[in-house]
Image (cartoon, rainbow, N blue to C red):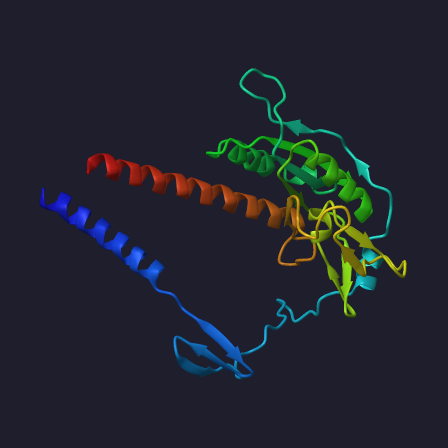
Length: 257
């Protein structure tokens, strides 16, 4: 009985801490190199600017270097390789679509299938669509993303070296997956050099209509790409298992209390 009351008191204390913490507001005001944090002036001039760090000191690649390794060739899509079936055995609407680099696909099948199974067994009950691609321009990949979106897909996962779109802002050129997420905005390559200098609202807005994430290890050299991707998918599986164990433990504690 004492243990039971102790657990209840601990839970109440945690809830009180969370409630008090959420009620405390922090106001930050900036003025040049100074900021005001809850009434105290703090010098922010010595805060280090974000810097680029790579394992072996490499600099980020340029768009020209990217093109040397990614020649623009027409995309070859495999068509549907896997689609979640519902309990009646018919095809379900897929809310998550996975596009895998064709070259990588055969080497990650086992862990990919486990990843798909985990997605399908989440509380939300995800349905999954899988396809591969070889080559492709940003426009072709975006057309694929758009088709999945209009087929009621909520999000996309790229696995492997899927073609990147590049944008240019004030002279800086960088990969930009917002190009794939903003389906109703207008992206224009003004000087026809392959990257997009202009991004406007187009027929909608400049925000994303769909989320796009990447599982990407193509440029890493700690190990082969397939080993790194498989290791990542295994870690995702282990994390999901841990979350399930914790959830079951909490449910058991709740029943015991």
